[in-house]
Length: 334
Image 1 (cartoon, rainbow, N blue to C red):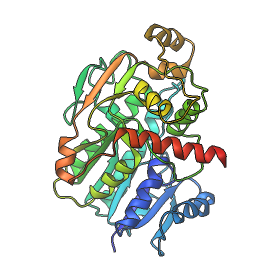
Image 2 (cartoon, one colour; image 1 turned 90 degrees about the horizontal axis):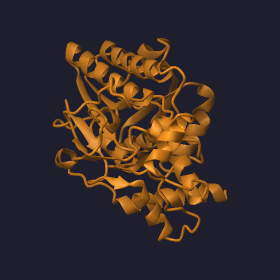
Image 3 (cartoon, helix red, strand yellow; image 1 turned 60 degrees about the horizontal axis):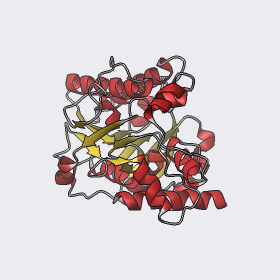
Image 4 (tube, rainbow, N blue to C red; image 1 turned 45 degrees about the horizontal axis):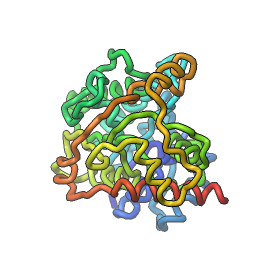
């Protein structure tokens, strides 16, 4: 029985990865920042699959060395999903960059020390945006320019953490696969609506969000993201690849609201905020400032390589949108 150290198991993507790994027959050791959360996380996972004794937890912090070598010593793989995320711009960009980069290197060093050959790392399409000008194809060989005018702390954190991972694994002769979703939606496995994805849908379906930004990008279903993470552990063709996991084409946020509106979500607004308004509000609002790299732009990615390597087809965009809305609605109803 092969065991995976799964960092960030309590997160939106992490929970889905844990369930998918267990379904595929792996033992899972999930890292959390406090063991006080272990029972709640285990109960959540048990709603979707019986772990049959193959689920355990360990306490790790992205900014502390304590526990990493101990955590990996009985594992065969490391799946590093843990990373900070905030849509609002922090006062100090290192609040995001430091834990992202240092946490990634801690996971990799521990894996190397334990003789683990392959690591699967959660990156993002935001590490592939080039000069952040939009209306451009992004892909395996494109990197976000962290010195670009609109490069936010989050974009920098994902790009710099991934670059550090490639440099480390190349130097040490390790295998690395990076997974690159776009904005991630899909059903929540917990009742937590505090994450960015669930918060957006909550605000949209309740009518609290009156206007969406004018932007298009390939979006991702969390179930696809988890599946590819798990398949990447042992697929021989995945090694050394930057794997894009998303819809086949870019979709706008207006499309998202129109799907909801036409399927009975009456409170949804399909209005789009003028670009100048977003830019104006960004001067005073850190959340709006975080949207500037995407406002008025279209980013298009190609998933052909992912489809070929894994014999995979992405969840249709409309299904992703409606399944997310149903999940959020169910949680809101209690």
